[in-house]
Structures are given as C-alpha cells and as structure tokens.
Image 1 (cartoon, rainbow, N blue to C red):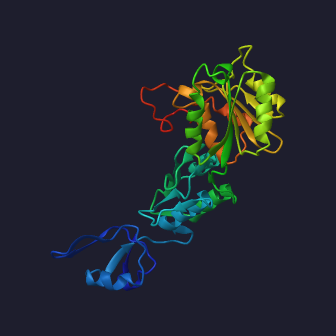
Image 2 (image 1 turned 45 degrees about the vertical axis):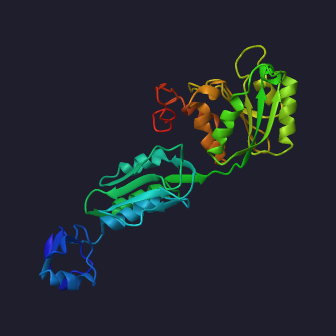
Image 3 (image 1 turned 180 degrees about the vertical axis):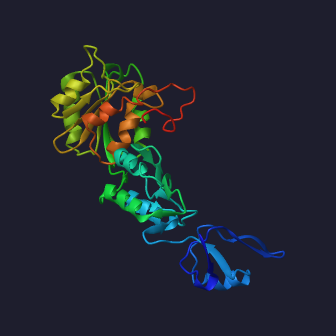
Length: 340
C-alpha cells in the first residue's frame, strides 16, 4: 500500500475502513475497505479531515475484488439467473428468476475453483428451484487479484455458462391407472391423487385419466387413446413388479415407446420405467412406492422432465450415488442427501 493525496486518489482502492462521526447523528464506516474512490467522494473525505489516504497500489494487470466478482458472475449465469443488486465486500450472488430445473457443470466448476484466489460456491445442481432462490455466490479471496486468473477462468467458461436454469415447459399430463382391483372397484384409487399433487408443483395439469385392468392390450389401448390427445407427459401407475399379472412395462413398449430404463439404482423406486415416443413425449411407469413414500425416484426425475430436458440412461445410472433414502421420521426432501 502507499500514501497518496486525497485529491489524487480517484480510482484507487482504500486499504481500510474510514470512520465518520457526527455527534448525535452518525458514527460508523463512511467508506469501507476495498472502496474505489470516486470524484464525488473527495469533498466528504476532506470534510472528515482526510488529506491523505492509504490505498492499494493498483498495478497494471491487477483487478479490484468487485470487478473480479462481476466477471465470475458472468461466467456462471444464463438468461434465467439474476445477480444480487449490490456487490458487497467483493461478493456477488446469483438468484433464480423463475421456477425451474437447476444444473451445475461440476467438472468445469471444479476446474475454476482450482485456480488460486477465486471461488464460486453453488447449491446442489440437478434439482428443482423456486423463483428467488439463491443459487450461487462468487468472489475473489484477496482485495485485488491478477487479471490473468480471471482470464483463465474465462477460458474454461468458453461462452458456456457454468450454471443453467431451465424453466418448466410441460403443461399437461395423462395418467393411466392400472390394476384389476381398482378397475373393478374393489379398492379405492389412492395413487392418482398423489400423482396429481406432485404434478401441480411443476405447473402440470392432469387433463386425462383412465382406469384399466391389468391386461397388456387394455393398457396399450389406453396409452394409444391418450396419445391421440397429445399430452406433454404420460404416466402409468401400478403393475411395475415382476409378478406374472403385471403387464405395464410390456404395454408401454408395445405402444411404441423407446425404453430408456426399466429399473433404477434408487430406493425407493427401483422398479421405475422411463421411455420416450418418437415425437419426444415422455412416458413413465411408476412403482407402487410413489403412492406412499414421501420421496422416490419419481421426485428426482420429474423436475428435469418437467423442464423438457431429455433424461438419458447415463442420468439414471448416476442416481445411484445418493439414491438411497434414509427413511427419516420427518421427510426433509429435497433438503437432504437423497437424490444428490
């Protein structure tokens, strides 16, 4: 740091807080460490008796923490993410502009965080968020940082944001309830109301509902009929086990869906099925646990599907890490390790 005349300090960075005291009115830091002196600050500084200031020597190729934080934010955000209104103490935060599915490019995030003196911290990716949710915070560690470090981070960025928030796109769904016991009225359908409520959370209306028995042809016919209505999503409940009378997986395949997976490394929800028709419409076969468990594989997959993002076999395979629900007495999903 160096001592400089206050009148010549415009554009320089303060090394420490400067306290201002006005009897019975104000006592506190009028200017804080890291503040960049402006022309408008000069009269106030002089009125505080500050003829000279200790400032950082801003060498060529160095950046103030606020400017560096802004550049880190630019590396992260897409169109559905907004910055905090102010940069405080060299830190800026990112917030969700809308409800949607939040993703983090973890590999590139790790690469950027491996650069000394800069950091980006995010919430868990691959999850649902609400408008206004805090998504990330970023800052540099020292008060000033070499521009080369930001350039290296920007090289990793390469025009592709580290964070991505995709708003929900699906608007409606068809639910096909299978099971001869429900079809014949022997038991009450308690599965469909659960599905309807889960879909509502993502802005999806259940516009079509059919109840059929367990025959493969009957289930296939129901799928064909709802497909003619062009729903955004088709869900088949029940009949997902390996019992001889459970024909839902075969009916979905017979209806023309390409099966991504029948089975998932997630508990509860191992008997989950996901497929897509040629027009891109997703179809799911939901195991019975979805009816009674607070959180299952369905809750992990649904946010991504609701955002119109295609789920791959690889996506399902990766769910095994964090795919064991701990069965807590009070469910805290999604604020828990399940699905993370």
